Length: 214
Ligand SMILES: *Cc1c(COP(=O)(O)O)cnc(C)c1O
Image (cartoon, rainbow, N blue to C red; front, top):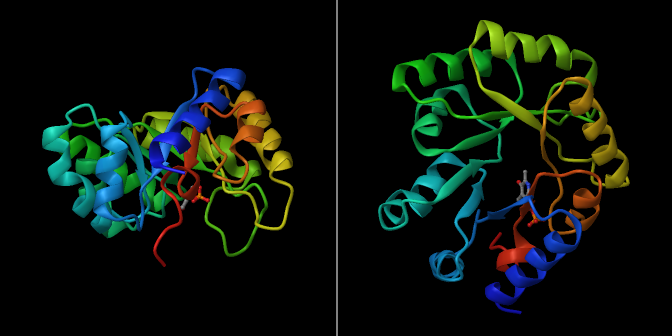
């Protein structure tokens, strides 16, 4: 299927389930012609997981498409915070205190408030980044009151071998407990379920663009 057909299918799923949700087209490791095809279909919200690739993909295209909205969905190193704050409109992967401190300093320096989501390690996986649910209230308080960050919600990447729905429902529950409204959850394989369970932003890569380069 073409990008335009893929996009139509996804947006139809939104219509039936959660019309106000946002479709983030994940453009990592996709060739330039697919990015342009997506733009030609009217897609303006894109997700990337590496700073340098995001700059290569979007810095120039942004001049032609001022309504572009770029979301960072991959891990952020503290030495890349300056570039991230300059380029992105939303950061989904706030996952540790050191990063929160840096983001606060850099947003102040650039006089730019970039809305952030806190990544929650819902599966308590050792190798995965993210705040544990139990530490979320303290971390949220630290981000807001010590670092001055605009926190809009939560993000999760469920463990590969677990039923994603359980993690989506759990993320929704702790978002409610902490009075956070935005939920970034659901990818190509499971986004309809994520929409049913309250996602306000889904991150779809291969299901939107087709298979990625390795
Ligand atoms: C790559 C990626 C996606 C998109 O994955 P697909 O399975 O291609 O939809 C979503 N979220 C994150 C954090 C990613 O790194």
